[in-house]
Length: 325
Image: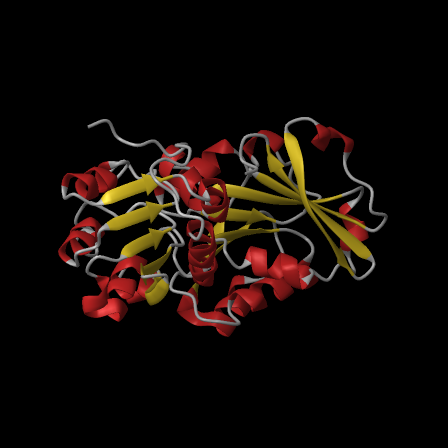
């Protein structure tokens, strides 16, 4: 049987209630933001006779996958029910046994899945296993939404490189002296494994403080690109062994590749006048501007995604072509 692909359009028999349940799964999955790296954010529901009997989402520290949490909540009501999940159930032994086996053992009769797992150890094999067991499995409902939610995971799984989010000043970085990152920016920044520090130490401290405002299972990696008063002694004094600092003489493809080798799945690069950012390395760019103007050279290669007002500043975010979903 040919394996399903990550870009598969919705296939199989769909019910008019399926989209609503999948959207609920996406909401559940998003609760794992900042708490799943290097894995994906996943949400799952068990539905029987139009009624939710089990739900779950993935957190790295809890080990059990979203499907297993949902199955355990459903108990015997899972037999003959429908599984909705934002990602294909895994088919291999990792930190946990295969979720596909748990789904089969629970007696699920139908599975509605948003997207195929890009992990080469899964990549369609979970769907195959379900179908071979007689489960009606469809793939592709809300696929774009699921991929966007997990763009960091998809980038790392398919390339071995971290997802790069660069923050740039529209004009001189000095203009950002009074920039206080918006709530929306801080929530987005919380998802990244590493931060490349620059000169804007006030905004850096706000971002780092937000990183530690709630539990994280991974240490935050700080990459210093030049002498800064955001010193190692100060940072380790505040956060102890929850933080790791690296010294980078330059920012480029070599450093990005090395971060990927060490398991860093994503990097937030803050603005600094002393390093030149290579746009070709960025997957997402946020332009911070006092005037609301945008950089002209972002019109090629990037699509506008979001815009947020942060006091006297405007934060305009772009995604690279082909990654906006």
